[in-house]
Amino acid sequence: MQATFPSHVRRLDASDAGAGGMSDDPIDRLAYELVAAFRVRPGDLVLCVAGERLPARLRVLEGDGLVQLDTSAACPPESIERSGDLPIGAALVSGYLIGRVESPAE
Image 1 (tube, rainbow, N blue to C red):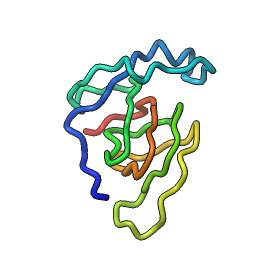
Image 2 (cartoon, rainbow, N blue to C red):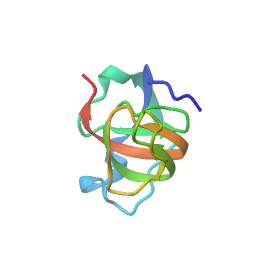
Image 3 (cartoon, one colour):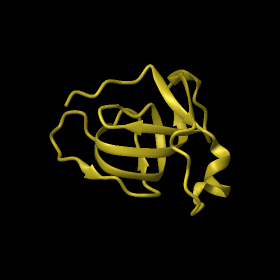
């Protein structure tokens, strides 16, 4: 599967994630706004789905699936872990994730 770097991302309502983003309340994955990828800022929540590259360095709040950290495909995809940090450009191979932007792409 060839993942492409997104020109737009699904930005979620950051207030849904609670203080520090570690609330046990579910985040509404259907209530997002589509924004240009360069408009995401630290603290924003984004929803990424299979086939996409991550638009920013993200702290995972919720998700299930596999992510390819190395774009050379030399290492196997890894399971998504809550509270894990993922780098800009990592490819989401399967599933979905909701992440808090730690640092946006420049």
